[in-house]
Image (cartoon, rainbow over all chains, first blue to last red):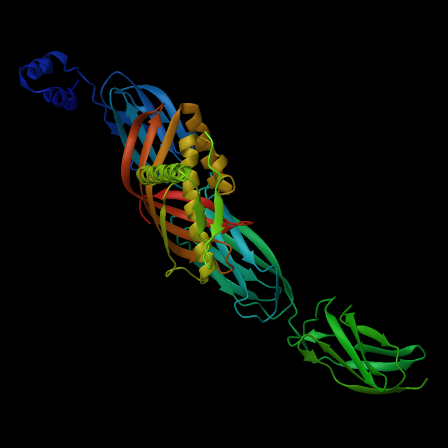
Length: 297
Length: 202
């Protein structure tokens, strides 16, 4: 048992003889309560807070996700359940009897239990520098971001090539990478691994801009049928269906343009023109060859 | 009491109004003068009260250093938006923890941060605890801005006065430096806090 110095000093400040008398008469024994908290612990841990002194007191735990109150007996340990310490951050343990004492401790994230893996974009043209990027964030069982450096293995694999493979330690809770897209159109698998944890994502590599656009045409009774050779990019990947090819015909009657989507690698159109006409095609930045056709009425 | 009929006329070339009248004119002038004096007194009192009274709404100082952010460069507009949203977030956090109502922080938190904040407010309400934050200042440093701009990590060195009260009694009072690791992501109309973790050291 100890005596409250503050109480004594306050009463002494009444000054003089009466003050001194009162000091002896009214100074009440106040139980000192000391708290002993862990310096730091992982989220979801069991822990114990030691108290000193004696008598009944109120215990408060104030921290992220927690603001609890409990009656305790000083001198006995206070047990904190894992559920009370599930979020990372600073906690204040407060004990109040006649006065209040507090101590602070930190809870850090537990070991990684899942990986958040953000990847961009979902479709990427081939042969694009620094076109694919990703961020990996490890989280523990309680969705706390793990801030301690964690090695993340990242692999980016195309159908026939490995685009990226490296171990990157997290910094400030995240690991990131950026890489160029490959040469071949098709699915790309991205895998992030940390210990026995794995997160997978996929993206689609698509053909880049068309290259060497060539057209052929044939007069028919109903007009001129014009079509492209299979449209491919410069790496030889077939350009995606739906990509628009613009056919243009110029003749004595003027100019006519038809937009046609690529279907099965080829775009087709029929021009209802007569007389001599010059045909050309364009797709993206690629210009096709020119054809001269003379269709009689 | 009847007022004398007055005739009004405008001075040529001026907008000033000249009032002609009998002895009541003096009375009218005196009345106007008294009214003006009264207005001056009331005005002065309002100014004095507004200076003496605490400012309405928390005054939170926030600054953001983007010099170490990467790999993506932070645009000026984004910087301004993050600053404004983070300041608003702390104003709302203070209000929510003081009133034990998570309404003010609706839309500010998402994910795990929202879960723990809602739980904090609920358990504060249950235990009769309230927390007051005042004199807040936050020095933010952007340490990571994702390549696609969909995630930013900030280090916040904050300083504030904190009071924890139980049924109006202060059980904890401190002023100190607090360090937070903050993860924000762009929402529909603002940057939202996905993680807000107080740490011992960065």
